[in-house]
Length: 170
Picture (cartoon, rainbow, N blue to C red):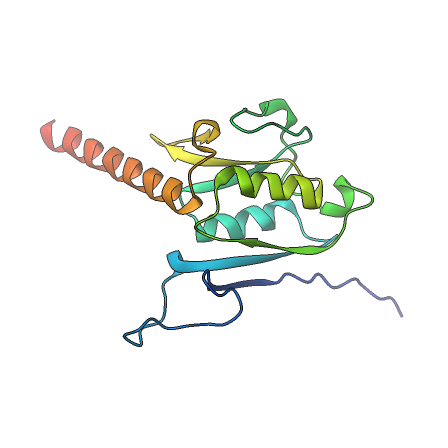
């Protein structure tokens, strides 16, 4: 009889002010996605694609990218150092430690990138959607994830409006 390792993929989204319990606001309405804290369980069998997918489902105008080489705050990472999406954590680091990363909307971009680096020895960059292209947030490292996501959403909405105006005026 052969045994397969079962992959465990834990994601919970709960209010950022508590990060322990599902809550409702003072009017009895459940808090929205944008007010919540996200937890991602990192373990040997999780792939970078899975981590990135969960993050982007919560922040649709942001993307995580993982690199072979660390970077400093307000510093860009080289495209040649991007790690492939299908890589499992156990492949990247032999001494990887399992753990949970809590991602709060009020967390600064630089703090999230530093947490991936320090706790998991996994260099990360947050990218934002700008004029339809993914750009590293190097100049926005001191902004919160919520603010950068919203800024990128508004930027994307402007692109849609401009495209619609071009079609309408033609």
